[in-house]
Image (tube, rainbow, N blue to C red):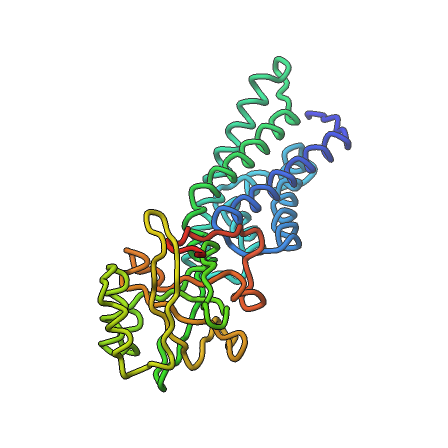
Length: 320
């Protein structure tokens, strides 16, 4: 009968290394997929994996039965599924499968690098599990950083889109707006902030002659101001918004004062009500957003996902 000498400190070190690996693996999965979780859930998921590993170690030296069952592939899958469930519950099946795909891919790559390093750089015939863990951790961190960079653009497109509702003459229009750090425009009459909206999104609200004047101003038509003064509708609402942009100075956009503007669930009225500037062309060729909102208008209105970074595409219009 084989006899084993067990070193408690070595076992504790291996369990600690496994826990660190599992925790960072779940964290990297959450980071890349932008799946919400908490430190408590990450800890719980990591403990599930570490307990399974501890039972496996005990069974491998005969302290527990069922060694074959603990290393049985379906059992390993069930344990990993329990880890994902504990970390990310509640989560839809599609998102859970996506998270699982990243989890297994990162895990296989990191474990492979760790094992290779442990055997290649460890003493002859005695793999260095500590070195293997360090290499695995570095691999996970590298993958998480690269993975976050790859999906960064998609993420910020989601985080920094805000719902906007504009009410004018009893009509309401809803659209998605981009939080734009380059939008510093001000209404010259009341110094209120300006939300830039493309004319297509406003077509159900704008009188046809107002749309025509907005287009004429954009094209630099010298007769645009004459058209503006001859308008009979919306005369008390309309504004001229000066702007500068790359390749163009002293430009003018037509703007108007709406009855109400809502960003998210917050209504902007009175002294906080912005002016709407009419942009004759599409702001986004892909149609993902139809308006540009200054950042300060969304303060205390929306919650940013923890760990997100501020992003806004540069505006084509800036402060005069």
